[in-house]
Image 1 (tube, rainbow, N blue to C red):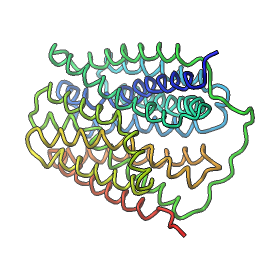
Image 2 (image 1 turned 135 degrees about the vertical axis):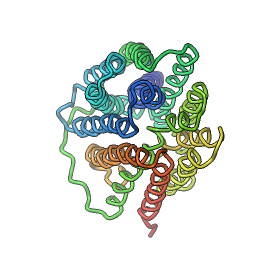
Image 3 (image 1 turned 120 degrees about the vertical axis):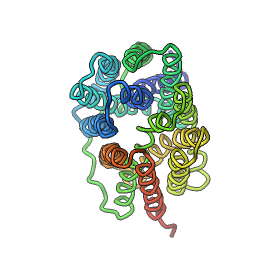
Length: 386
């Protein structure tokens, strides 16, 4: 018999790999591959924005679908199916050059990544909770940063070999397939349950909760502009292909320990203050990526984006769950819907602004302003101590 401790470690490690595949690569590998697609296929910034938004729309639809009780008892099967699909869909992007196909594939990839996100979280968190190892959540979420770093390393190798954009997608599919095999071997059962499926009560009609939902949507808009176009910004600034990969690598490496770090900060200053602080730190990165010349701006943008966005996503969900403890699934769905809406609108708006203005400066400044508002609303949503 394996101990609950070693089981918790195994599941946290599997969660990390699954998040690296479905999120770090499945969702975010588009960022370092995009400049090559724009150059070789003559994609406009607006087209690039539409492809990105299709992925986020798929994520929104998937998260809402996964929040229903229909999936109870099938979590492992659905998670593995979605993880396998994520690998196939990544490779498929390298086999076409049609705009309609890109939009459809990225929509389905978003759907798959949401299924992995929701179902893998329910599996991993139940096993680490049973072992009393809530601290291992940081490992699980760290997978997003790991996947970004792996995809950046892959792109660095490909650009030195003068490979085209399609190779980036094909190799992403191959790496994702390896991750799928590892997760399938490590995760041999679904979430631990007490056997009952109960109906969650309606969400409380609470002003603070409403503020959190709105702030989370604004954060979705604010972070996603830089998360989508950071490498394209470097390309526009005349940075080398290896430097592009380096900026994305830095974002991933900063993301890997970020949840652990921000949980420590939240323990000191409170969840809401930590969320707001994270937004303000990210504002510096988003602004620096376009306002500071040379290598310093994009590198600072990469570090501060990677070091905040995964953690703020986790902190926002935690804060909302504190306000609706009896309805975790409902609040997860509503928060994800709000976040999803923000990140669908973000790339479209940024792509259109970039096309109209000729660069990503205005789009990034708008994103920074939205992040300030998100942080301020969250700050004001903190429950007042009696």
